[in-house]
Length: 222
Image (cartoon, rainbow, N blue to C red; front, side, top):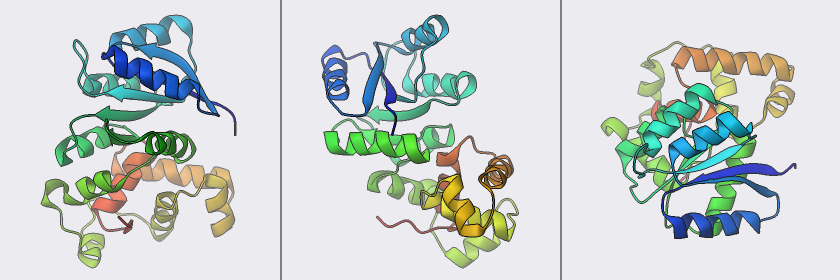
C-alpha cells in the first residue's frame, strides 16, 4: 500500500503536535499538513497544491469549526476523506457529520490503535464506524430497526442489484471485489455506486453505509 497523506487540523497546540508525532512515527503514514485552524488548511490547499488523502479535524475550533470546515472540504475537495476527532460524542453530532460527508467520527480519548485503524480503513473503504458511531446511527431520530418494515418503507426505490451492491459496500468490498462476486466489471460497479449515491442523496461511501444501517438494509455487529 502507498503512503497515506494526512493533514491534522486542531487549535490545541500540544494535542496537535502530539498527534503529529504519532503520525510521523507510524509506518505508511505521511504527515503533509499540520494546521491550527480550518482557514489555515484551506489556504494551504489553495497555495501549496497539497495532496491529502485523509484530514483529521477537530470539531471545536475558533473562527471556523469542524462542521463548517467539513462542509467546505466536501464542496471543494471531495476526494479528501474527513475524520472528525472531538470531545463531543452524541447521536445528533455523529449523524450530522456523516450526513454531510465525514467518513468517520471518533472521540478524542480514543487510543492510538483505533485512530490508526480508522485512518487505514477510511483510506481503503471510505468509512470507519466504531461501536459508538453505529449506536448513534441506529438511534438517530429515535429510529428503531425493523428490517422488513424498513425495507418496505425506504424513501427511495432501490433495484435488487443496487441493494445487493450496497450490502457489499457495507462489508468493505472494493469495486473490484464486488465485481468478482457479482460477475460485473469494476467500472460497472462504480456506475451502480454513483446511481445509489444520487438516488439516496448522499455524498460518499460513508453516506451509503449510514443510509443502509438506518433503513435496516444491513445489520452491522456492535
